[in-house]
Each structure stands twice: as C-alpha cells, then as structure tokens.
Image (cartoon, rainbow, N blue to C red; front, side, top):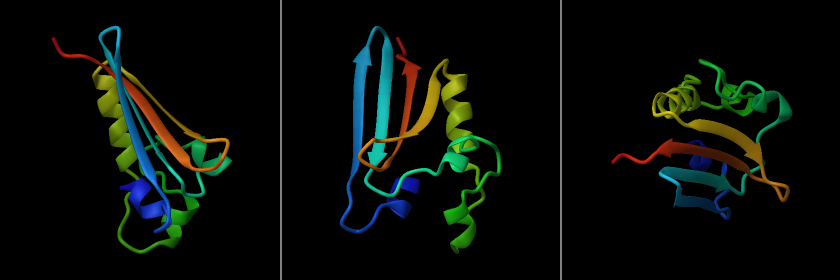
Amino acid sequence: MNSIRYTPDSGRINMDVAIKDDRLYFRICDTGKGFSPKDLAHIFDRFYRGDDARRSEGGHMGLGLYIAGKLVEAHGGAIKAFNLPEGGACIAFDIAVCK
C-alpha cells in the first residue's frame, strides 16, 4: 500500500520474486521520491510514521512495515528498506521455502 500511496500516477511499482537455495527473495520498488534518511533509520519501528504520512489524511498508524518485519523475522528471514540510486523506495526480504 505504501508504494501505491507514494508513487505518482505516472510512476511504476515493480515486484521481483526469485528462489535460490531453499529461500524466496522478494523485492518491491517504486518510482516515488524514496525514503528520507531520517525515515530509513526508523522505518520498521512500531508506530513510526514518516513525515509524509504525518501530513496525510487517512488514519495511517505506522504499523504496516513493523508488522511486515515481524512476519518476515518469524519465518526466519530478513527485511531491509533502501532507495534506488535513480530514485524510488524499495523493500526487500527473504523467507525460507516451505517443504
């Protein structure tokens, strides 16, 4: 939802999924303005809302990426947030493949 919310109408959202060595790797990137350095430091904190979210309407609670991080960790994975060099925000995570 964050990618949809913060990507301009003319922008793009890409999702890549790969499997390697019994792990699934996901990467979701958009062509929005990306994360601020301040936001990147706290993006997975419970109830953290970035500056843009605090200025917007709609009742955002700051729990989405916190919950995503906890779910990924519960499945033995890792999650990270970063910006692309050309601009845009990315969330990447991996989880074990169920057998």
